[in-house]
Amino acid sequence: MKYLHTMVRVHDLDSSMRFYRDALGLVEVKRAEYEAGRFTLVYLAAPGDENAQIELTYNWPDASGQAEVYTGGRNFGHVAYAVNDIYAACQRLMDHGVTINRPPRDGRMAFVRSPDGISVELLQAGPALAAAEPWTSMPNIGAW
Image (cartoon, rainbow, N blue to C red; front, side, top):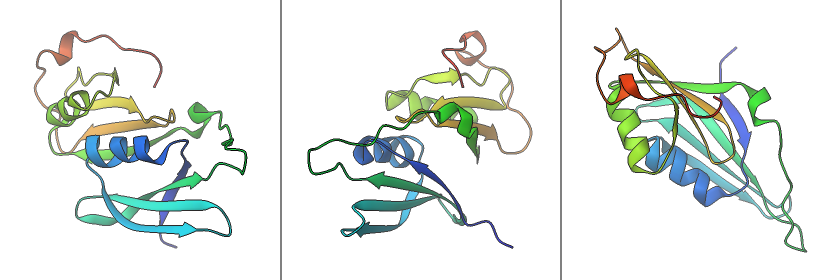
């Protein structure tokens, strides 16, 4: 058995790509559009690690322009990525307008949410970094 990917449905493919690719730093490894099924699949992975992918599924709006509404993002749980520098990763996300829901006050763990409410956990690779501002003073915001 081999892990392939985690699939999440997204409301807006462009805003999701800005989050997962631009802010989080994942790279697109494959994209397929299915005209007959009216959906697009985009597979992303951490740079250098194509074995663990996230599949973004974008179901196109119907003929009247209505898109399906997805609920329950919290019951999905979360996806997790190890990062080389949790402070730099969180700063990059903030620079892209992403709210840090659970700041890395401990130098080890943080949580953010995608545009569709998917919880994303960031974990410091290796030992925790030394506590540093502004992270140690940042409060939790919302749920993660």
